Amino acid sequence: EQLPIFKAQNPDAKTTELIRRIAQRWRELPDSKKKIYQDAYRAEWQVYKEEISRFKEQLTPSQIMSLEKEIMDKHLKRKAMTKKKEKLKTVKENWKNLSDSEKELYIQHTKEDETRYHNEMKSWEEQM
Image (cartoon, rainbow, N blue to C red; front, side):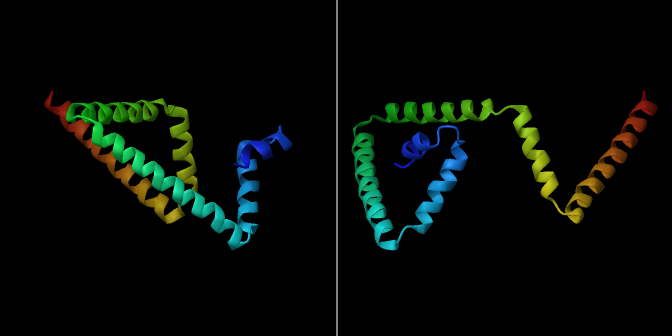
């Protein structure tokens, strides 16, 4: 509700910054005013759940299966769109956030795997 207003007031601001500002205003809002929004949300959510329930009751089993398949396909497509670069960035950030002792465990496992690999390769080459 507030995002378009904030966006118009600050056209050059990033969306994340606008969301931060909106969240700050929400935290500063008195509980009495928050309750108005929360009650409206609950009422809208209840109406939505009832509409979905009525919609699902009208579906045949094959339509339900098709809907589930479509949802699954959309989810898989969205997941596949995640670029390797983004995944690598996430892994890098996670690695940075690990403590030295946690990193040491991974380093030790890597060394063990490398040793095992070399031993298996040597054994395989001798059998050839």
